[in-house]
Structure formats: C-alpha cells, structure tokens
Length: 437
Image (cartoon, rainbow, N blue to C red):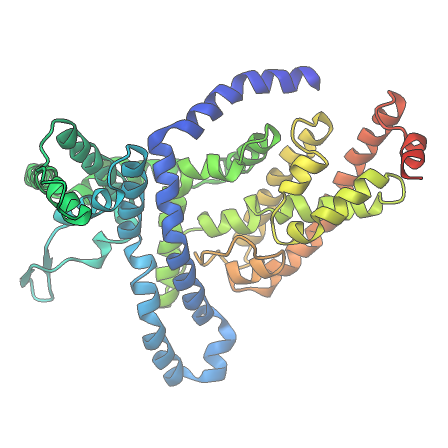
C-alpha cells in the first residue's frame, strides 16, 4: 500500500500542481463560482414548480399563474449563465495580471455581446434586427464566454503593455484616469471581436457560439457526460483529497462547463413541462457522486461505533460532527486524518464508484427522478439533497439507506488501521489514558 501511495504521489502531484497554479484554470473556476449565488437561487425557486403535489394542490390555472410569476427568476439567472461566466472569468484573469479587474470584465462582456447574433427570425420568416436570442446567453454559449473572456483580457493586456492607454495629469481623480487608460485598449479589443464576428460569417455556422457548439462543445459533451466519466470524476475528487488538495475545485475546473450546460438544459425543460434530457449533469454529480456527506456521514457513524475503543477518534468525531453533517469534511480529512493515510485510500476510492453506479441505476430504472438541474447549496445535508435534486422523496430515502453499507465499510477499514497501529505501537491506549489522568 505504501508503494502504491508513493507511485500515485509521484504521478499526480505534478499534474495537480499545474492545475492548481494555472492562471486560466483558476480564472475559469472563479468565474463559475461567481455565478453560483444567482443560478442557485434561480434554480431552487424554479425547482419547486416541478414538485408534483403543487399542480394538484393549486390547480392548473393557478399553477400557470405561479409559473408566470416565477419564470423571470430562471430567465435572468440560469438562462443567462454565459453572461455571469464571461464577467467572472475576465474579472479573475484581469486581477491575476494586476489589471483593473472591472474594466477587464466590462470589455470582455462587450466583446462577448458583439459575438452574439443580433438577428432573430420570427414566425412567418420575418427577420427582427437588433434582437438577441436568449439561447446565445445561456448554457449553449458557455464555451463562447470562456473563449471571449480569455481572448479579450489578453488583447486588453497586450494593448496596455504596449503603452496604448491615455495618461492624464496626476491631479485627475483615479476613476477618471482608469477610464481614459482603458479607452484605447477597450477599442482595440472590440475591433478584434468585430473582426472575429465578421470572419465567422464565412463559416457554415455563421457565429462563434454555433461554431464552437458544433465543432467543440457537442463532441466533448458526449465524452464528458457518461457513466464512466462520472465515476472517474468522483474517484479523482477523492484521490486529490487524499493528497491534501481540494478535490472538488481541481476536478470541477475541467468538467464544470459540461455539467452546468446539461443542468441548465434540464432546468429549462422542467420549467417548460418537458421531459428532462440529461441524466448526467451538475445536479447528478452533487446528489450521487461528490457531495461531502458520502464521505463524512458514514465515517462519522463508523467513528461513533468505535468511540469506546479509540478515545482519540472519539475526539475527532465530536469536532467533525456538525461540519460533517453539512458536507464540510476538512476536520476529518486533516484531523483523523484521511490525507496520506494508506488505510483510508481504498474506502475513499470505492465510495464514489458505488454511489455513482447506484445513482445511475435508480435513475434509469425510474425509481428516482432524473436530476432537475437545480443548483443545490453546498451545505445541503443528506436526504434533503436527494429530494431537492430530483424532486422525488425516494432519492432522499435511498441516500439514507446507503449510509448503512458505507458505514460498515468505513468501520472495517478503521478496524484494520486500529489493529495495525496497536501492533506496531503507533497507538498506545494505556499511554493515552495515563496522559489524560
């Protein structure tokens, strides 16, 4: 086991270090984090409309009125997620270059909007000019937002580095100075965006969003949103955590665009009363794969079962109990610890495999509903996350039932570690009791 840990450490640590320090990866991560409060609020409000009991209780006419009232919450949150993404990524990237982050975000937003098609064909074939289809601001345009955020900030930075900003006397207020400094670089960035827009008119797709979706996003989505990939994500999250790295942050930086797109598609279908198109999305990942309770709750139960045999573990359990129930498992990771603990590696890797396979089986068999796409708050506890994420009580019950075999598995590996530590003298119960007295 020690040899395996050493091999994994040699292979994974360089990759993890590059991912964790890469400027663009960090900007993408921060950009999606910026969107969370708004998409989470909008999706939770929308998710309540999908609860079957509401329609029967309120009646069809009242339900339509409620939907009309709630629709703007989703329309101006999840349906414009690309706007949040382009602003968030550009802000973070500009800040990493020590540029004015607000101007970096603004010029990227303007460039992104320049790339949006501004003609909509209405019923009857009539073209409406200076109108933007909301579809070009939503999940379909996430990759466009990423590209334009990075491209715009880089062009803006290049212009500033070549002294293209206007300098005013020192007596001028800083806010006005910043605006004049940004004037020429912003104009150059917008010209680049307009040139790119014109260039794309010669392609079959006609615009950047459709071009990326056809050639990049659609093929990659097929590779990213499948059962083996979901299992791999869960394993990688816990593997990174094993080495003391924030697994969710490392993995979501790569897969978040695909998962978010699929989740928004499900949420929009839910709001429209249509069948949900995607089993795998960010909500599936949260409910069945990477939420903290899959590790913390069964491990806390196992530690409680061991509380009379290991007082040191009982102390860790008390400290980690409240955070662990709300998916915060750092006290367990570093207090037990799980980090670089070879006895804990196997259950850490087995857990996401079992839970993801279980989630897939109960979904495709119709036992639980397809994940709605709702963005579940990080601190949502077990049972409630299943109910909110699928609009079915069954999912929450299955989550609770899974705690039994998972707790038994963790208890088994705690027993193995306890036996080993007692035999080699790492843990001395008598010495611990003497120290307490």
